[in-house]
Image (cartoon, chains in turn green, brown):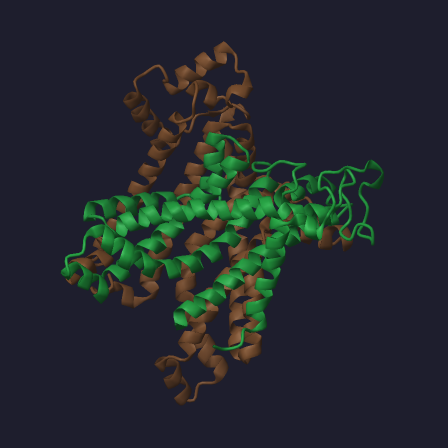
Length: 267
Length: 327
């Protein structure tokens, strides 16, 4: 076991901070994230308000700490939806009969024709904006990528010796899926999920920023950026710090995913 | 068992150039048809009156005349299969209906807005390529520490959300330094910040792919043999390594174009720049369904064409893809 490097420990430290913020925000910032104080509006970072205040005098640091829970939760839920759909489509494709594989592969191809956020935007146009629909939208937009990866992984595991051995031993379809194929797909999938959460956080907060997800004054990072948009030229701290929280959490999960990936590969 | 499994790994490809191309174009047509079908049925899933949905949902308080006109225009009184056929027929003629929020045919809105976004995306793609090659070559030449630094830069670049990068660049170059306008408009200097915003995250991604394949190429036999023939380190990188490393990145350029158009939604909004992305966002906000579906379908069409093109280019650039075994 080699000693973990800075590249491996730094993301864990950053993520630990955000996770503690999400679980017990009052431990780090005991204030009320929604408490307004009109006399203290638009204050620059100072000793009293380390990251400044917004248009209603709410403390930005408190809001960022309290915003960790919704922001991270939306990212994680969206990833869960994307991975769940991806797993179903990928397993159906990789294990099902040929016609089912063709159908699901084609379906995924069609979803791939809507790049990036487009599928999410189409979904929101139909289902209406809001936190729930934007989470589902991000999950939907990431699903085709997961489906393709799961399918290729399932195909390679399926052709391996131990699955053939299980088949020869007369084990049924479910047993082969649950005992042999899924456990061997999960390691790769776990890495992908870690890499994907960062992206989901960024996309979900983009939607909030565009006014299609969580709306202000809720303490969510994208929504905070949205309300800071109007004042960006004069009060930079209103957009800079919530954005920094998004960048840090996304970069940290990506780096964590990377080091997990190299561990899985080398083992 | 193994044979069956192996045959499934390379699905329905094969054949020589022309047959491959016909198959690829067939796939393209299928995807476009299915995408159009998907949007048709997705619209019918909206609860309530479809005529009302087309005019902006229950909140729009459309008048009875407007609803009747919409029913007439989209043939909503007819059976579903006739509506479907009529819709597909109109799509074939690039007729996407009328945008109620802009009171203009959707196709003319798109024709007006697309060139600006295309210019933005093309410039960003070009800049991303230049940045990615620079970082890849620099970190391949300068050893481990530079490699780690390059890799860290790439991870941060990829994690940068467009909206935050855009506002940070505006703060730095417009508010503080006053060099560039914060609003893009149609002037050339207004293009600089949007292009940089779109290019940096993409460059990080392309850079990761290029650096990895460049390092692979530099340790492969053909690079060794070039070195033993007396080729300089620079020569090996530029004449042999980069050619090899560019292949996966070319393949990704189609995908990159898609993310750029999607990123344009955010970037055009931040910089108040007219374009397809901003049009799409205001259409989503107004729930202007004809404009949303029209825009999304046109982007899907352009995106599918570009990915098909990069597949063809890939095949031309990499003779290995043309052999029977890999076909």
